Image 1 (cartoon, helix red, strand yellow):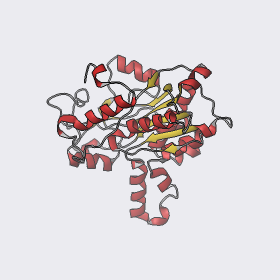
Image 2 (cartoon, helix red, strand yellow):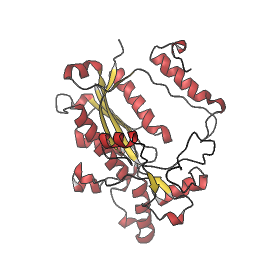
Image 3 (cartoon, helix red, strand yellow):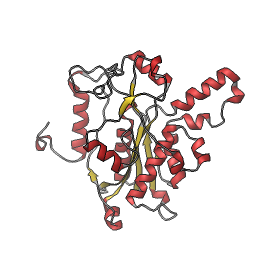
Image 4 (tube, one colour):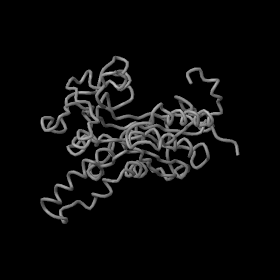
Length: 300
């Protein structure tokens, strides 16, 4: 069977630079940064003082207040961004297509907020005070599950958990699901809300975070004086569908995905293999998937 072409027709975002695509893009173009001193926790308790926090987020703009209370922040972000993306794609999900609409949203760590909150309740008041929604709010795949429930998408429902690559891998896996015909449309991306005391403690102990106290210069991944990453939060969601469907619907096409590659280094739990051979193999996979010869790409 001929492989189907897959395009991007919808965008949605909750981010430290804006809670919609237009605001995010304007801030990027203007060179603004979403990094500032952390307010979600007491920064004086930790050696790291900056983070990229989402600001002015009101979940009740996107979901019922009762539903929001049964979701961790990472799931709320995903639901909000997914609804924006589906609206942007002008995709109507109903009985005629619901079983052909999938959801594939990654999260590296899931519900850290609810984990810390419920653990404290357990220590102080015992198991009877732990919420019956604790586990459903905690697990990383609940973002995909709640998006499915909120939007009525009944196709494949999954979550890729691959640490910092969870969102990118989820988009790649979703692309493959549409390409091979598992679904005709898929809501995909990543979501994270790890700005908690325990997360800060863990990453600080690893010495993985930047100890730079200047929010404007703390994130500098390609600088020779870099000293770690800046932890952040938010969600980015896309709607993918077949090219045929997009043309038939008259949908706006942002881009076409033509190849995807993913590899493991078998080297170290955090550091990449020396020489970047893992990334090179992933690129080779993506080029082969796209049926592009390496010599046709001038930067390899």
